[in-house]
Image 1 (cartoon, one colour):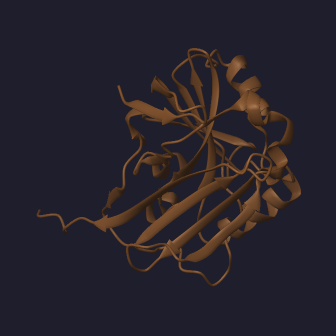
Image 2: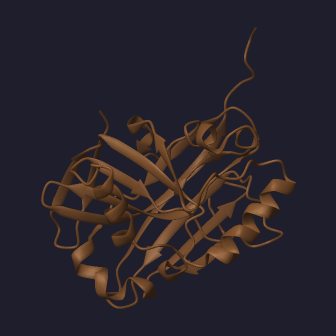
Length: 228
């Protein structure tokens, strides 16, 4: 099993062995906007979900804290998201980037979610410490053609997404509200005209109340062509 390690604001470290990893999809609070997005994706050949919001099980080993992601072709991209991590003494909140295979996505969203890792931040906050001002926390993503992400592609707040408490209720209904469960939130809109198929990605969650931030950054490396 994958073990994730998080630095908390008090300087302590919390290790969590990942037993279940789930990716939420179509998880905006304004479901009218979600339906419009589904219609846009349908025009690109991406199949719509049977219900919204959606929830996709992902192989637990794909929860990673790495600085490099290997891909098979040039049409993959990240997504700025938050992640809840259930530890043995409470729930942690960190930032995440769900790297997705866009070519595979047209054949099945669940398949595409299992083609690349979910990159999580190395710092985290206790959910109880930020629950009363979650909607003020910003969520941003940057991309870059080189190794340094320098172009803003996503810029929103957690107010745009269904809350961690919403998803904790869903997990409880399914018997998954237990230590070792990691859930990635679903993403926010991307800026038009910015190349999402970039060489590098950075995502950040910033808390204007505490002044703290958590981020994750990585470069994308394309593997050699297969033989045979």
